Figure 1 (cartoon, rainbow, N blue to C red):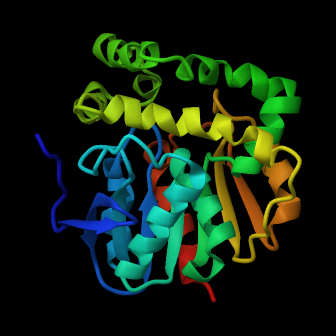
Figure 2: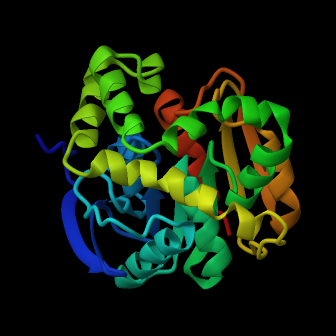
Figure 3: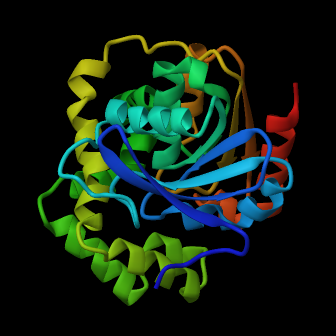
Length: 281
């Protein structure tokens, strides 16, 4: 089953050596929406319609997820950011960019590596990659929250573990989403090659730690707005404090009652923030 929304078109293109799938709706300034783990473009479904009245919305399946190609390599943050750069170029960018979870990590990398492609950057419960590395190495609360990352580094076991969690309803998504939504993500995650590709995001960033842990990241010069659910059990907000000195203009809005999946939990507030932020001079 391929899920869709009224009025969206499904598109495909080969960029940076990988075929990506995305949905598109609306006219106006380009907005690129980047999802997290273990989701796909569907995670933005509550924002696509309302935002498409004002913007050209592109919600992408990132490398390895859902309908996009699942190569064996290319899951380091630099390559993933280059995927998005090439997609933005193909779409006639620059773009306003919003990213959640892994989409946010890659969006930060995109803004560092290719600043001329990003007009503004909205981040939803996602760490700057260098901030996450520093917090993971030195901050006790983030270390406690990141216990699952160690499991994700193992060969084979995590793939079967997440599939089992989807089957028995213990996947973290199920804490905030109804069964019918979890079923959509389960079907996408069980597509051949998806589980390994998705977990390779974790496996690759850990390999970057020796190179990045003592290096000052490149500055992010575009405006950044962070939307953060305070009840996130995987990420500590200290990552925002660590990242702030590397960003020219950063504002953070906390949602005390929200968990990790803020676009789903607080859809109207997230849509309002994105519209106001991207529409402002």
